[in-house]
Length: 597
Image (cartoon, helix red, strand yellow):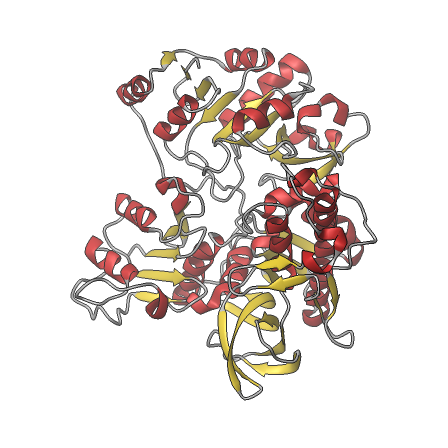
């Protein structure tokens, strides 16, 4: 009998993952459907389940706080809103006890463990140690100094084994206090219901990721927009007047962020203590604070220092477990600058390294669903390496559908379009968007919902940033034919980079050939493309290669600044209508939709 399991993540990066007999049918973030960036409450995404099945064996809920205490209630019946919605949709038995439904499994207080599960099950490893570096994970209430205190999980290390064994060996919790730092060498697990014994650290620090978020706010953005800080960091330099962000937590026994410079404001952030340090203050009448050298230097400091802290954590994980297969997840795992830096540092230790491409909280929906599947079936079959991220729902459009959407936005359609026609547009310095197949899961555009441009154009970065309404310093990625990757880039032992998780160095003499996608530090975030991974995208890049001798196209996410990636064809054409982008290529239909602005 077919087994259907859905995992949902409730908070920011709210998402749904649907499994059929243990295989992902679709995974999507709520923001793609609601069009609200970082949207919470995956109600629209849950409705997508009905397109594939009218029943669920299990609905698995992920968050940082307990479902029944924090999710809200349905009027009159009083069941929590997710159980209630699943009940109303007919996905779970309507006759069961709505207040304690056996088909609904609440794994909310296993946040870091679900990050670990997502990474482990998709790594291809038979056994691994998971390093989870996140902002503020599971909310943990503990008795500290005779007071009941709420703390939040910051960094964790787990051993991971099939079918569903995830044991904590290290946890770092942070809170507002006031209380003295605590080091407990062995602690019975009271966080997520396990029985393991592990090293537990509790202090008043912001942790690695929250410190990065504090600097992100200091640079003028929402704390969750840490990717912008990563883009700004190469504009900075070492600054001796900025004190170290991270320091010894207690007698050399652990590392933590320095509360003198980073003040946590749990649970929703942290801030830079700029009032204490003259170097960090903001001059009056500053139009763009990213032009201030102290902002740039602070971005440089938090990038270089935080990646060094995570490296220490990775090495601590191997030392404590003896396992050299390491998987990295949690929000910090999306730091492609750090991920590339680790490769050079880990090779001498013989560490096999996997970074989960859906490291943000959306990945916990996948981790929750897979954990329950393997626990229920006791399957020890090792899942293969997660080669594809094209996990969005399936869409198909008739010629009439395409025509109606084009007319809605006063666009025209060109038929029988070839890849050569698209390359000709790119070589005339036009932006061409591409829309095909299922959308990418995670934050990277990988050729199904992408904006494409000519990487050889010297002013391409400024031009596309302006059109997309992004900051001047934001870099762009390149998608390269897999067989040419090692010629153009220093892969540091990587065979491929299909998920765009590494910002790599160019090989000598090659960076100047693709100036619009090489950042100021000489790196480029790349996606390697094999034909079997994405035939239409591969053939388009190959056509560009035949015309130019450059096996790379400029690739960035198909959205405008501050918006989610487009999901549907209507989203795509509407984005053209609201911008100066004129061309949308549908390779499956050999069609270009053109909207002259």
